[in-house]
Each structure stands twice: as structure tokens, then as C-alpha cells.
Image (tube, rainbow over all chains, first blue to last red; front, side):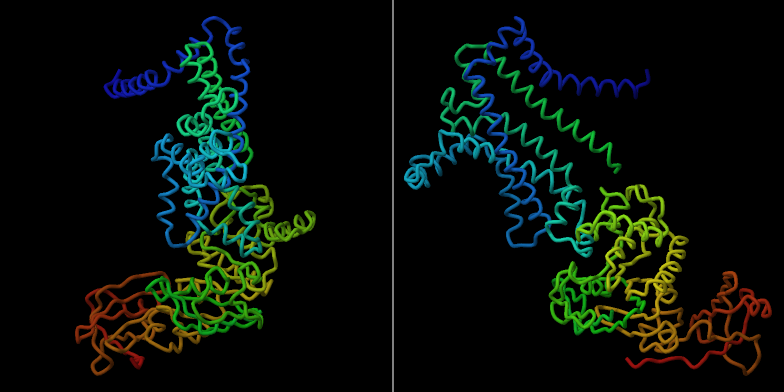
Amino acid sequence: MSANAARRLGVRMLALGYLALLLGAPVGMIFYRTFEHGLAPVWSAVTAPNAEHAFWLSLEIVAIAVPLNTIFGIGMALLLERGRFWGKGLLGLVIDLPFAISPVVVGLALVLVYGKTGWLGDWLTTNGIQIIFSVPGMVIATAVVSLPFVARETMPVLRELGIDAEQAAETLGASAWQTFWRVTLPAIRWGVVYGVVLSTARALGEFGAVSIVSGRIEGQTQTLPLYVQDRFENFDSTGAYAAAVLLALLALGTLLAMNLLTRRTRGRTAS
Amino acid sequence: MAIEVREVSKRFGDFVALGDVSLRVGDGALTALLGPSGSGKSTLLRIIAGLESPDSGEVVIDEQNVTDAPARMRGVGFVFQHYAPFKHMTVHDNVGFGLSVRKRPKAEIRERVKELLGLVRLEGLAERYPSQLSGGQLQRMALARALAVQPQVLLLDEPFGALDAQVRAELREWLRRLHEEIHVTTIFVTHDQEEAMEVAEQIVVMNKGRIEQAGTPRELYESPGNEFVMSFIGPVNRLGDAFVRPHDIEILPSVEGVGTEALVERVVHLGFEVRVELKLHDGRDIWAQITRENAQQLELREGQILSVRLPAPRVFAA
């Protein structure tokens, strides 16, 4: 073996070892401990009423928050990349805030605005709207923490695309709406898809912000991650592991689905 | 359709891209906007297309004031410098795009696209994607796409700029013939004077955001209105304030009393043309363009002393 090959092998082992210690071993352990006593206890754990409720609630929140962020993210990316206005740099910074601020702080901030004693509290109470300690608040919290992904993944693609194709569409008689659907969106779709995947994964796993705004009411405002923690704290390790594996599988499923989708569509249009 | 630009100005920050430019292009004409980079020629083209709006002035197409009309309402076909293909669409869908957004029936679109691909000689490539085409093919696809909606006016931004020399020459010739065939009012932007002379019926010479002179290639070459046009169009020798065309210089065997004495410094054979670099007896450098035959008769070689007869030099008022 030449020195070069040895060095390459060494680097590879180092990278793999790092991944194994940080990711492989813990995730593997979860799977192992979950299925240690066979499928039956796992099945009864994930079909417990509170577990099922948490599962569907998580999906519901993702199903609302991710599309909202996708639309907002694409709009924001277009505004920041194509628009010319005062305060653009500032807006770009604001979009990144959810990356920088701890989710717990986001949760507290939402309570300060939408809570009973919060800034909008009186108005919301008078109108019979409850946001904190209920699903709307959890959707908002989830949307905030996964806000930047679509915009940030779409912006570089838009920048690289340039405005020539859009202007060409315009000279050919396309309206702004037609140009967006037929020229811009198809050209940036992989950036958007990637942003949606990241948003979904992030939204599914969200714990801190949702933990605060939800009030963690069993069978009502408990998402899967909150349920996992609840089970763990109550020394129900089977329930905790089973729910954790379910969560991991959901995230894996998202990545896989997007991967397959991307591959299939890419095969059709040579690029 | 005739195009008229009236006193158009455009600034980008402190940079004056166009200062009070007026221009008239007749119906069916093939016109070149010629100038160095930064002369404002592309900006003017984009203002005519509606892709840029002027700070002041008016754009009139076919007697209609379109200054405030959006690009898509102007009936203008625009070919971009880098072709701006829709990369996710086939050649067929690219060319048919303008018809498709106008919601024309599929059969009609197919028919028209086929006809246009024939016109630009891209038959058989309809199902390809832009990434599978060469530069010249992309250029022709972009042209077919612009022509599909039967524009009143065809605008081309540096149409041959990104192509290699041979494809370039071919496409120039082809654009001329295409123009004779379809006779749509056409303006193209170029920084290459040879390209402008070869293709255009009328040339508008631009410099620093202004029009220096407009006219036929011959007019501009034979009676340039100022220093800039003289030196931008065709080769030139500068002697102080005066200008002399290299092919107007006569070279004779050294004879007492005839012309000016000159030393041959370098002889460059370029096929039919021979370029002779000379030093005049007063120390000024000058170059002359003579035929191969003429050079042979003179038995030109470096270090030789000759007589040179200069034509009446052209002087422009400052």
C-alpha cells in the first residue's frame, strides 16, 4: 500500500468513525433497544391512544406549517433576489433569525404576544380565539423555527438562474404569473424541494418552541417529540423508544420520498 | 414597423448610460447599433424592448407611444446575448412558448413550430433539450422562439458575440438572408465594426451614451462625421490631428522629389493584403495597406528606403 492510499484510508476511517460515534451508534442503539423484545410490545406502545394522537397531531402540524413556509419561502426568495427596495439587507437578516435564536426563546416570545396576559391576549380572549396551549400556537411555533429553509435553499438557485429567461418569457408575451409558473418555478424546483425536505424534517422534530406554547397536555397538545419526552420522564422506556423510532422513520421516509421523486423526475428531463 | 426613439436618457447611479438619444429606424430596415462596451447600445436596445425604462424621453413603435407599455405588450422579439433558453423545456416547447402563453390550440402550435424550425434549420432537433445543442444551434433556437409570435420588431443583443469565428461568419450571412425573407424591422447590437458593415443596411455608431453618427456602411466609411467614427470604422493612421486611411497611402520606389522618404520597418503578409509598417523621415510611425502584387513589384523588404505619397489627410474640428 502506498503512503497516499494509506493516508486516504486513514482519512476515510476517521470520517466514518466520527459519524459512527455521533450518529450511527446512538440511532442504532435506539432501534436495537426498541426491538429487543420483538414487535408485539412496540406495536402496543405505538398504538396507545396518546401515542397515536401525538403521531397524527405531528403530521397535522407539519401539513399546515410546511406548505405555509413553502409559499412564504418562495415569495421571500423572489423578493430578496429580484426586488429592489430599501431595507433588503435587513430583511435578509430577519429571515435568518430563527436559525440563530434558540427555539425555547421563540416559544417564550410567542407566549408574550399571543398568551392570555400577552400583547394580543385581551383581544384574542374577547374574540374567543385560543392560540397558546392549542394547535394554532403549535403551528405558528413550528412555522417560525422552520421558516428560513425554503427561502435560503431557493435564493442561490434563483441567483444563478439570472433574469434572462424570465425577461425572455416576458418579451414573448407571458404575464408575471405565467412566467413564474412556467419558467421560474420549474427552474428553481430542486432548490424548493430541498428546502421543503429540510423544513419537514425540522418541523417533525421540533421540540423546544412547541414544548412551551403547547402546554404539553396529554392526548391534546402532545406532538411526537413531546410524547417521547413524556414517556421517558415517566420511566416508560418501551413507549419512549418506540415513539422515537417512529419519529426517526417518519424523517427517513421524508428524505427517501424526496430522493426518489427527484431521481424519477430528473431521469425524464435531461439537464 | 418603424421605430422612433425621442430624446431618451438613462442613468445607472452616477453613470450616464444614455444622454438624450434620438433615433429613427425605418419599416423593414436592418440596423446595427455599433459602439464600444459602455457606449449605451445595449441599454438603448433594452429600452426599445421595454426591459428597461428610460428616465426621460419616448419610445414609439409603429406610431404608437409605447414608453409606458410593458415588454409583453410591445410586439417585440428579443434575442438575448446568451440566448436565455428555457432549460427545462425541449426545443419544441421553447419555440412554442409565446404561442402557448397565448393559449393557441396545440395543433396550431405544432404546425408553426415545425415551420420555424425549418426556417432556422433545426428540423429533427425538436425533442432535444437546450443543453444538448451547440452555441450556434441555441442561437437559432432563440431566434425561432422570438419569431414565433410574429413580432413587429426583432431586437438582437450581441447576437454573434459568444460564437466562434466560423459559426459567426455563417450566422451573419444567414441572418441577412433571413431578413430578406421575412422583412421584419430588425436592430442588432454589436461592438464589431466588420460585423456591422457586413450585415446591416444602416449603422448607428454610439459612444459614451450618445449617437455619434448614423448612416449606411458606405457613408460612414467614406464620410465619417468625426474623429470617433473615423477611427472606429475601418483602419486608420493618426498623424497629429489628422487621419489617413492605410489603403490611401501610396508607396513608390525611392525617387528624389516625389512624396516623403520612409523606412520600411516591418512587412506582414496577410494573403491578398500586405501590411507595411513605416517610419517617416520626420520620425512618425505609419502603416500602409497594399496589394500583394504591389508589394512584389516594389520588392519590399525590411530596412528599405522608399517614397510615400500621403493623401490629403482628414481633419475634424475639435
